[in-house]
Image (cartoon, rainbow, N blue to C red; front, side, top):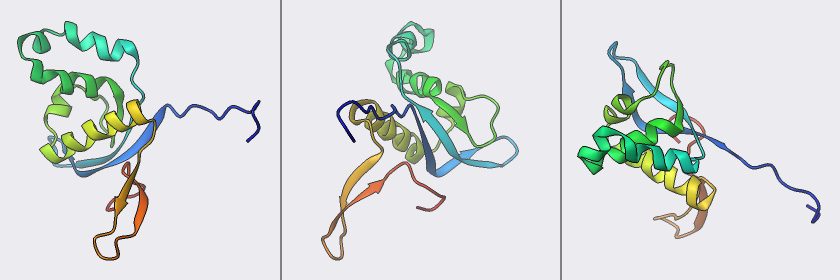
Length: 129
């Protein structure tokens, strides 16, 4: 790439949850999209009454603002995010941190068998990856 070429900024990141959100009908929603956070996304949850009452809600409210798609759910709100399995919440928190501080969903991991270091897309490309 030459000095004058600018690569486009990636603003959305697809992911596959480890377990998935189970809706009221028993349907599991695993595939989703998260967008980059804006300054407003990080500030507005601080005004939310739930967050003012208990700071632990901050993560739920913030993730509900930046997760733009989860399976076929029509809306993503803090109730949906709060209904995730702990593993999935942790996954989304890590993904948020990666894309908003590091700008990538890639992580360097070491194979426990051969000790080779490889890059892995922690966003996942397909269920089970």
